[in-house]
Image 1 (tube, one colour):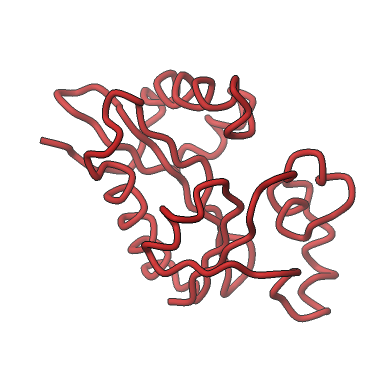
Image 2 (image 1 turned 135 degrees about the vertical axis):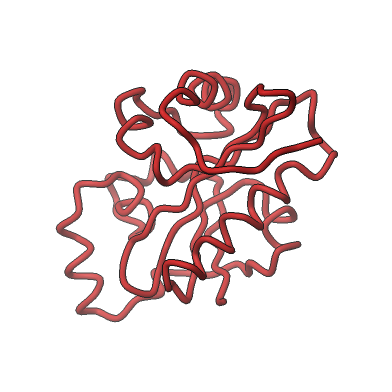
Length: 164
């Protein structure tokens, strides 16, 4: 039985291992451990028998916009619906905090598409919001804005958006 719940600081080591397992082959961006601790409140985890086997995060970018980040499932649990359960909880959380749109940058277009995400071009925000977002130090915001400095991180990824 899979339990989907908010992450705790004690889960960060397991999240770190999941991220590393996908970052090493280039399927996900690596994250510093300090960043995982700083954003632990954004994470949802899946656990089986007390062991974290999946994770995903919701990062708010603006009043109506958030990003799904770091969705990963231990490979031995693939094709069992764990990733779908994590993403459904993230979407539910997005509704709870009041965002109207969720962005993702992914290689897994079929997975996100099955949840209603559609491929987009460009940055779907008004020019004044774009200017505000430029002030962010967050690397994910730079990727969302499709800034030149973030291009090496986003090569081959597809930009997708879900409107709630």
